[in-house]
Image 1 (cartoon, rainbow, N blue to C red):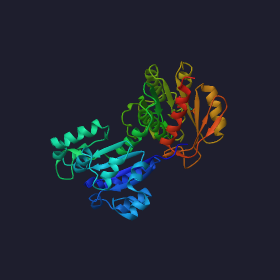
Image 2 (tube, rainbow, N blue to C red; image 1 turned 30 degrees about the vertical axis):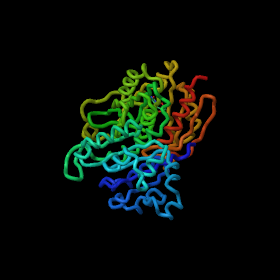
Image 3 (cartoon, rainbow, N blue to C red; image 1 turned 60 degrees about the horizontal axis):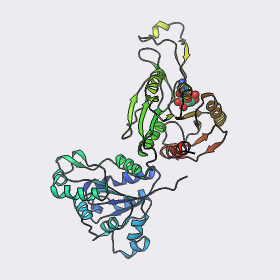
Image 4 (cartoon, rainbow, N blue to C red; image 1 turned 30 degrees about the horizontal axis):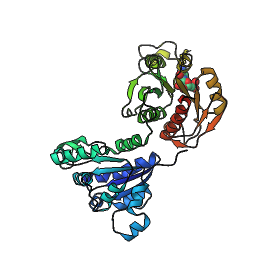
Length: 402
Ligand code: C5P
């Protein structure tokens, strides 16, 4: 299992600093270890104590404070980081970074670090558009500094335009993207996620309980690693991961048709969708009225089997890598082994849906990787993003030339 990655959040004195506790929480949720360094002005907008509480680490503010330096000196802090996120980054801090200033803690750390730096600017639109800021942006860009945002919208100063700091979730995603190895460049990854919906009549349907979170996390990780990703999504309200092409479908038949369209050009297929095994034999176009059933008090429906998409594509696998998911409430491993043989894919990911801390509609999952050799790997409870990383580490090994 990977060690947590160490993220240093540098906060400068803009109003958007009030959002930084949310960034820290997002980074920690993604499994990272976080420390914060604040400029003197930053502490006017966000309480250092809040950042200390949410990060679980003491906050650094002063270059010359013997107590702070004693705990972790500024060079130690610069060396500690795997990634430095500067959010919000004011026009002033951008200028200082561009010109190599080191007259306070944050500028000294930014000059000393060898870690990749990701900058999230936040300022008034006129400051952002000023030729001086454009020139600084250019200098920083040529030095390999990464940028995220700013976004256009309503600004705290009352102006409308570009200058809003990107949302905390976008910044967390940008950090994860920067950390991800670009090991899937050239691969076309097809992911299915969410439950299918099988219509009964004009208003009713049956579906599977699936939030789609696991499949969406897999699509996001594939994208971070540099793959071209298409996500075929059943019912879910989740936002599309950045950079991922999404195709929405309803029924299992629609999902099969969409998978067949994308299958030819895909090299890795991950079927995390909860596909309904059966659908009503005939979908009634109008609404079945309660009165029509009067007296009997029963509604009998006939179901027919849906196509097994995973089995169908595994039969035409070629040199693709195909992964299935088996959600089971009992006999988890035995069920996954049986499905692996039956469907003929390269790996089955088994999850026990009887656990309340993992599986459906939660952000974490405890899975087993079940291999055709009979080997079973048990993973500990991980965020779904962590499960996705473990999954792609295995897939990449499978695809590496032997
Ligand atoms: O429903 P079941 O437990 O058989 O699902 C195991 C795997 O098969 C999952 O990866 C699911 O997406 C896939 N599947 C499918 N078509 C079906 C049923 C399941 O592709 N009709």
